[in-house]
Image (spheres, rainbow, N blue to C red):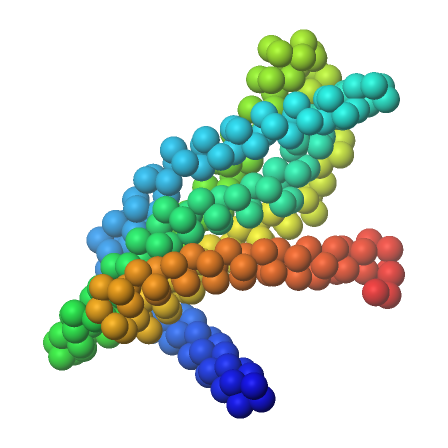
Length: 265
């Protein structure tokens, strides 16, 4: 048992080191030789435009459920008018970034891993190297850039759809006035909330793209290996997003309180 645990821990450390090196190499590649616009354009379309539908459905349904639950729970206490604030706050700081990252991982991340993994097991990546082309520059850098750009934009779209969904059910089903839903938002949604959502969306975009590409590059074992790598990439991405969400929340709030009140946490 000790040997198994030791080997598992060492393999984890080796994998983490290789993953960090991948991010470092891709970042250096981008600054040394920026990828072709055609490659970036294709990834922007694949990650961003093609994900609009699933992100819209996710944001809209989440906003509807949040608003309905808020009204059901708070109306008996005379607090139904804070429904708009609760929906907006939850979507901006937590649910928007996390759910968008989940949807993009499931729709795009799995495809990235499967595509790169298939190229790896069929030795297409070796062929790319033989033509003096850096696979990280050709395959990963465009996806890396597109993820950083499009995941935050998709997050904004998801947040807006969530707020819209909450508005629709609040006004047309529960007969709340539009003013009661929207008026408190500018008073209680702070710059910190927006910054927190933006930081999370950027980090989640980096995580999901790099993890899925890394697992694709490490694929072996033919078609079965591609399937396993794809499944592992999605699961690891989900877990990484949830853990990083918790850590980012703690770090940002600690910094915010330190700046605002001088608290020592």
